Image 1 (spheres, helix red, strand yellow):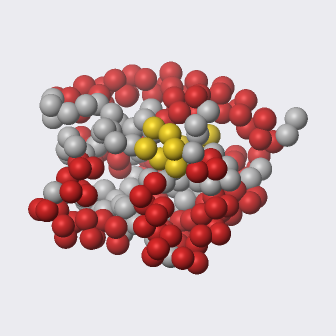
Image 2 (cartoon, rainbow, N blue to C red):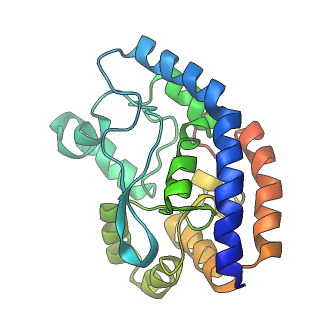
Length: 215
């Protein structure tokens, strides 16, 4: 059995267990999201991401921003300066003004990411892997950091992860060129030992809230 095959079996068993573990927390978060902004959905409205070999899939994520935030970010003229700073900060803005109160909490402790265990069960993602990037984000970063194109291709050769090397190495504190270098390194050297090290570090990063972009 190859490690890729073993990793898939591990993904199925662990993601099923984690779904059950986080289900009560996710239900409470969903209620809080709807209570704060009842007109918006529980999950992020627009969440297409780039998966293995460039395949686009819908990532499940609890909504942490005001309703229709993605449209406001990119199309509302009131957010023109915001969009410039948003792109400059590698699509992660510290203390984002569009973030809701409950959104700040769930993002700080990565609780908004937990529905992605469904994506893992479906096979779109792995528990551990590179960051699942937005399609337009990768297009923008290829232009801004042309030297990273080879690294991007390498990172996309494996499934993106709910957690990964960049998540336990700084998260939002890292610029794209450093982040994609970590992702490519993971894809190049993926192994059981590598995955176990990341898996062990992840709960501590979640609990600390370090690098979440939220204070």
